[in-house]
Length: 257
Ligand code: HXC
Image (cartoon, helix red, strand yellow):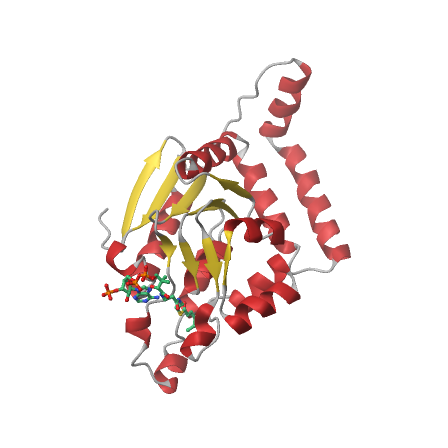
């Protein structure tokens, strides 16, 4: 399947999506939104794929929503067309997505990285929500997901001043899971995704679901959901295999379908 703004491939059990609008630093226009949604849906439906990596170029993961496309929009059109609303489909992906971020992840680019399940950053990564400098505010989750990720103090600092933070600051703040060298970035993300893909598929999807509920439920409800999901995994062949393999001191062979 050919996309105008994405490169798609599978590496073993991992689906790899590369944003590919190099001249616009991977600015996120409506074509990217449509194609990315489609690509993620098809990886979600592909039994071969156990995890997904989303990356950009060395210079830019994505420098934001496409300013050229947004410039002429008026309020009524923005409201009636639900401008940027379609991006919520990304977070509905059930398989884990790792964002491998090199260079700029600004505005919608930072927000897209935060829709993924975790971020591996190259040393040269730069994160920010510069919308305020354009006379607007974050519109793809920045005020909500960034605040949950790094807390109110730093989220306010970034959203109100529009400044960028480097990879080290982003890791200290809890936005980024790991920092690696720029050369290692893609391999590190692919290796992490391959590891995830090697585990019990049903356990992996439940783990993602459970962690994501932490932002939405009360502690009591979240703990109850976690325990019920945990208990339900004892109905799977993968739990029998995983625990038998441990007892027998061998590698488990999960039956991912
Ligand atoms: C459209 C973009 C773009 C964007 C860069 N480009 N970012 N086009 N939308 N968000 C284009 C430039 O116009 C330029 O095209 C080319 O990419 C290269 O960019 P340069 O600026 O020449 O590169 P450089 O000098 O290296 O600076 C990199 C940069 C800068 C610091 C990342 O491009 C920048 O500040 N970009 C905008 C970042 C931003 O404000 N993002 C938030 C967007 S708003 P030409 O044709 O001139 O070569 C957003 C809102 C979401 O995401 C929700 C609220 C509505």
